[in-house]
Length: 309
Image 1 (cartoon, one colour):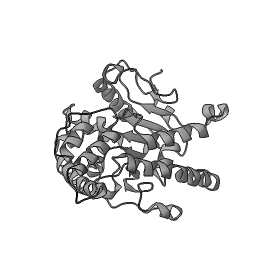
Image 2 (cartoon, rainbow, N blue to C red):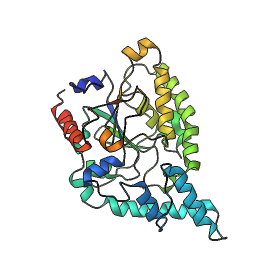
Image 3 (cartoon, helix red, strand yellow):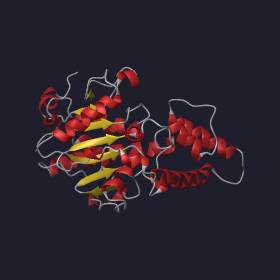
């Protein structure tokens, strides 16, 4: 595993970087304090207004279990009706929490350089980066490509653009409770869209050769660009993200494609804090894995700060 000496190694002509961010970015910003924006169990406890005695590494099933438990104590409402109330409450809780300045004071805004970055894929439900980069006002959703109009009600092509960078939320964001993806039912819908996005992408690839810097879906942002994953472990629960990454690797599976055309995928990983690195060999640590995360964040800031066009 070689540390990147020259940041241009992750960039290719006509492509900007796609940064994938998870709750670890919020943890970095506030110093490891557990809140509903840094801890999935804590978020579930808050939104269900009850601390759970059972928790697993499969947070999708944890959500489903708790939803069924909540529904089973009454006879008037179906699970979907109960869920609507839960999601509305969740949006309100996160809106209140993300307004706390502790998240913005040390947020790594140096990441969002339009000369380097084309897309930000947030696995979080909050809109902290968008709020910071737009001066506090959340921009309206960007215009969707006509050929993707069938997916208007999904997260496929739902983005906001700020200073030339498109921000995507495959799992939704709090401006629309209907966009939120928490349980298995919603994840299955997301996975169902994968093949549609793959076929659309292949068609666009054939008809729009050349500049691929502008992504028209979160899928294109993930498969067309070099990727840097920060504050996310890419757990097995991320069914939709892994589906896109696997399609990406199959697309570049031939030796010549892997060696000459495949944009790389890097991840920030610390073995002393997250355990042994266990991802496929096409996901590479960006820094030595024996470093703690705070050390790696400092190196990353130097990397972005030192990059010259």
